[in-house]
Length: 181
Ligand SMILES: *[C@@H]1O[C@H](CO)[C@@H](O)[C@H](O)[C@H]1NC(C)=O
Ligand SMILES: *[C@@H]1O[C@H](CO)[C@@H](O)[C@H](O)[C@H]1NC(C)=O
Ligand SMILES: *[C@@H]1O[C@H](CO)[C@@H](O)[C@H](O)[C@H]1NC(C)=O
Image (cartoon, rainbow, N blue to C red; front, side, top):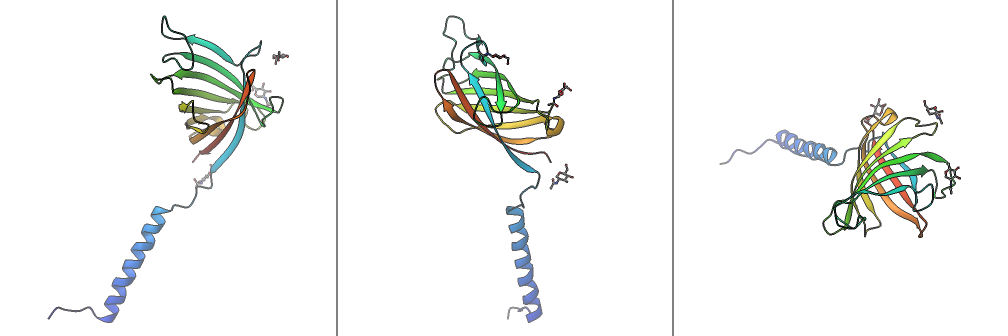
């Protein structure tokens, strides 16, 4: 006859089972990090005029048109970063860096941008954005790979969405979600 567990032993075995389930549950659903923050800014892109923000392509493949859809074209940008959608709203910094047409079929652009803050709260601090922006999608997610000053050790992601567009200018909404710990 097989040995059977006494009642207290059965209870203990059952408790161990539940304890291990509860433990696994906690492992699967970590409590949200209280240091996670989301910030919303707007990048103002003026296509033309003396204050144009896209310095039209600085490099590309010889003998081909240099454009956002031609593989190998490189643009240097310096976008004002504002608090709300209007270009006249409060300036908080500049988005400076490179846009590189990095897909052979022209479908995406590689983004390498520093958000350089110059407002009171974050003056001198920076965030580094890097990733692929698919031109045909309105929701474009890139990585926040690092930061300096108040954003040391930052990591997270940034979402770029077109908030306003006409031939003379466009405004991108930039939603940054980061953890600094
Ligand atoms: C360009 O920027 C300068 C400095 O911010 C400003 O004084 C000037 O009015 C701007 N020009 C235009 C056409 O927006
Ligand atoms: C930001 O820092 C620079 C250099 O330290 C300083 O000249 C400027 O006045 C500061 N701006 C603000 C808004 O605090
Ligand atoms: C949140 O940030 C503070 C200050 O940087 C730090 O002391 C704390 O440990 C962080 N909390 C978590 C859960 O990372």
